[in-house]
Image 1: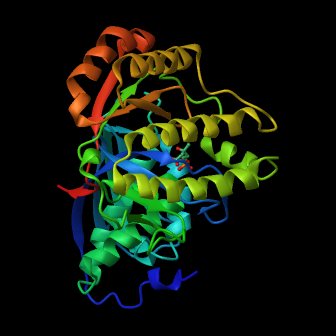
Image 2 (image 1 turned 135 degrees about the vertical axis):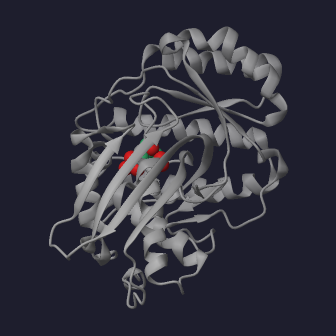
Length: 359
Ligand code: PMV
């Protein structure tokens, strides 16, 4: 695998003090990534919608200083210093230092905030780490102005992946594939790419309402969940199935077959959780209200001949996906019938977005 392409050779410019701000989205996988090998190499390809409203905004102030052997940074989350987030960021810098050696020559003040409530059960690592990666790439661009936009986005995804696999899918949009796959030209295990084929108009502005069933800390981290796939009795079949599902999803995204889309998306969500149920040790991340919502979605779909469907992340929250043409009726259904299963009736209406934006 060609990781050498991401080690900078020439950094021609001298840059003193600079500030960059990036807004990067959260994403929701349609075909899931669950299982990896070192360093953050996925066992199967995955594909996701980038979101619009759920995002992180991160500013990094870089001040030039004497080169040191340790990374020097301060970290603020929503205006307050956050010691508990430091270990994850230190680990991230350790993983990227080979590719961004210039970080040792700057003091970094990182200010970050999320559009979605903290501890809402919405994973913030994807948007959080992709935003830091974009800020690093803005600095690298100043140091080496010959970098192309294409390379900057590719390397940002590469860096973000080293922090959290799914973060590699939070640089571009509306659909991103991560993981080498024969049916997706240009795909790579090292970084996410924009879905390279023409997407059927029905998926334009697709809606995602995130029902916040459980805002608490996850009982099992995704790091541990990925790890449990190493000894998992169904792992190999699952990786093969996921890759087949990426081929199927690629077809669906091009031909607009919503019936197939619904079947595949829901099957992927339930299979992800089935892997958790069948791990050693086993664990359950769904809550009773997750199942209540799923059953109501199935009943609604049958009754209204609707294309709404659900997907799940590694948690109890439910993402409800539906075409823009059903927005009004489904939003009413969510408000009247599903919001009661959410903590404090809380849900977030989102739709597909187009990736990182510099502010
Ligand atoms: O990026 P990680 O290591 O947090 O893993 C995320 C895995 C899932 O969200 C469960 C699935 C996916 O593909 O996003």
